[in-house]
Image (cartoon, rainbow, N blue to C red; front, top):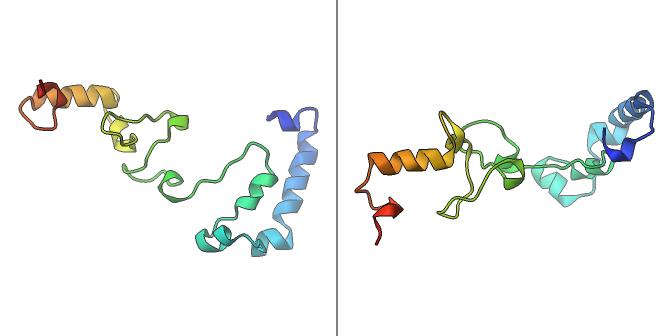
Length: 117
């Protein structure tokens, strides 16, 4: 449990969360936040859950191999300057291993940086 909930009864917390979720405002989205209207995601709920965050866009979706993996979730920034994506972690090894295999199999390609002197 989060430090914010230390020394609190989990059953009481669960009952409060259930009341919050069953409220009229929660069911009908009565937020005045413009971003909530545009995205359909109400970020004000993070006030009710300390330590929580809201992600929208491709970072929120776990589908596909095009999802960017944030550095705080184990991703990295590659030499090309782009963040790692889900497809970089498929199969054996990580992004560095895949780059090394690519360079060994395609030594004459222009995008193989080891060819530059």
